[in-house]
Amino acid sequence: MKIALSQYLSTNQNINYKNEILAGLTVAMTMIPESLSFAILAGLSPLVGLYGAFIMGIVTAIFGGRPAMVSGGAGATVITLIALNATYGDQYIFAAVALAGVFQILVGVFKLGRFVRLIPQPVMYGFLNGLAVVIFMSQLEQFKSTTNGVSSWISGTPLFTMLGLTILTVLVVFVFPKITKLIPASLVAIMVVFVLVLGFNIDTKTVGDIASIKGALPSFHIPYVPFNLETLKIILPYSIIMGSVGLIETLLTLTLVDEVTNSKGSSNKECLAQGAANITNGFFGGMGGCAMIAQTFVNLDAGSRSRIGPAIGAITILIIILIGAPVIEKIPMAALVGVMMMVAISTFKWGFFKLITKMPKSDIFVSVLVAAITILLHNLALAVFVGVIVCALVFAWDNAKRIRARKSIDEKGRKVYEIYGPLFFGSVTAFLEKFDINDDPKNIVIDLKESRVVDMSAIDALNLITSKYTQQNKHVILRHLSEDSIKLLANAKSIIEVNIEEDPTYKVMPKN
Image 1 (tube, rainbow, N blue to C red):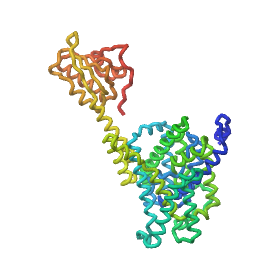
Image 2: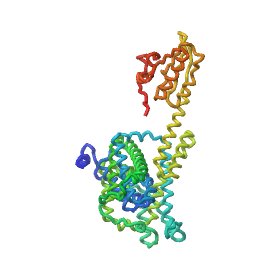
Image 3: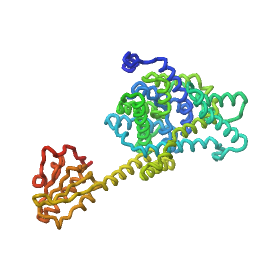
Image 4: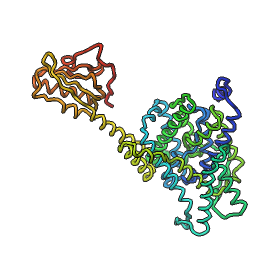
């Protein structure tokens, strides 16, 4: 804590305290409606959502690797836990969140955070578009009522009231930023609907009808679940999915903040902070979360550049938990539904449709596939994993077609194969087909100056081709191989022609 405070007060940071405080208050006002909505979306108490926002916000503000970045109860992580809560209850949620935090800390300890930058853009398009559809469709549940365990659509006056208030919320959120951006549009929309319902005594569902949020300071408790292997089998998949999705969202947000602020954050330090925050959530009754892109940009637009803004936002949420519950319980659910629908609309990457005619068909396929998995299975981590694998296979296929061989006879009468393109697992078959072993002369040169030996599959291919020539009593010279490749070739001493000035120095990717 002393380290964090000294950073706050450092004159080298040129902190504008007024901007930081105002930014923090603004962030809190934008986080509250989303925290309530996401908690209700997952079937949790609204208070669990507010606890999650406070704990994520304060822990990452102090210990995170990216000043000015805001974390809270995000939709991306909450969605991964819906099925777990529906089947096993909130205590399993808390256990899964804590375990997700452990997973994230391990990612930070082993410095794996940088690998999130390898996620291709088509995968991110599909991820965000699928997430947007899931968030939007989940709001339709608020237009249902449950009687004797049977769920059915509401009708008549309750339906028209709910629709009218939801549409009003959407319109306010859409129009108000065109008037001014000094006050969060979502907060204004909630206030307008709140005053309208209260002033005209409109009968509609409120937050208080879902659950009470009267609370105190979060208190420590150990999740009430059996501590055995069976419980671990239940929560582990959800924990890995939540932890992965949370880090993906967080580190992508970190990259965006780096670009906006022209500074560099620490991805591994942020992984550690996110893990610590989620572990704390699990033992203090919060729903966990990750970095929130929208709230982070609200914070940046308000002028925050240090840790103070996010910390002020988290503390403000705690104050509201302690003294503002009676007011929050009267907020119409239609207002929160409208806010979440606008969150879904803004999350969706509409520019994707403009790029369809310009994107390769493989990229379009990956984006649609990732979105479909996200929507149908609600499994964001699986969607991203499948998308990355497909992109890698497409990349391998495209590069496999780049392998070429130019054939000639040199002044010594040797057959020379000049190889072009990367030599790796995807291109070795095409590489081996380039050689005419039976008809070639006694001496052959394979020149790899314009190629690159990428992995062990390439080394095996070179071993194989030289062995085939040896069986025909023919002599092969491999030219322009790196020292690393030479060491790995089983019969290198007799077949390698070393050119010290021109041989490359790259390394070969080892087998796992």
